[in-house]
Length: 135
Image 1 (cartoon, rainbow, N blue to C red):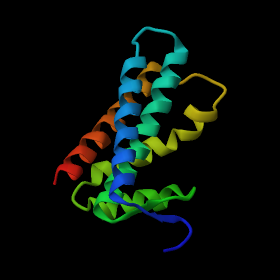
Image 2: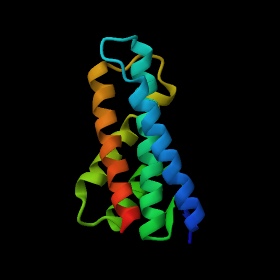
Image 3: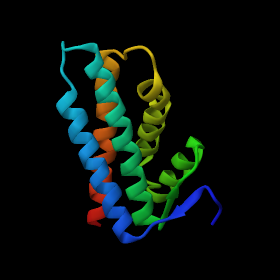
Image 4: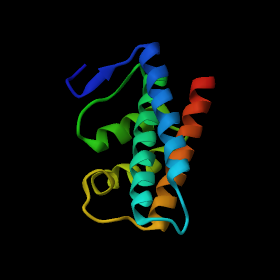
């Protein structure tokens, strides 16, 4: 395996699944329609983290490894390999990864609508993760 791929044990898959669930719960709890703008960024950041962790758990479960580099296309490609029949999952991960820099390091607030979209993408990915881990 190259340096940008990390093999995963069953225990690591479980841990990443826990991270995905916890980040999604935090994103859901912080989403406050009509609330402070800062909560939109917190929602978005946790949605991004939930999606990344869910993708890691899916790839670890189905492929035995995950992406560990900064190349987002590689992570999307691995998720496509892990769930070839679920193209929406790869698209959702791509949309979340596009928002990573803004939600993590941005000096401006994201809109409530954008936070809601990111939450939707993360929720779908965590749902896909749960289905993959149950099979």
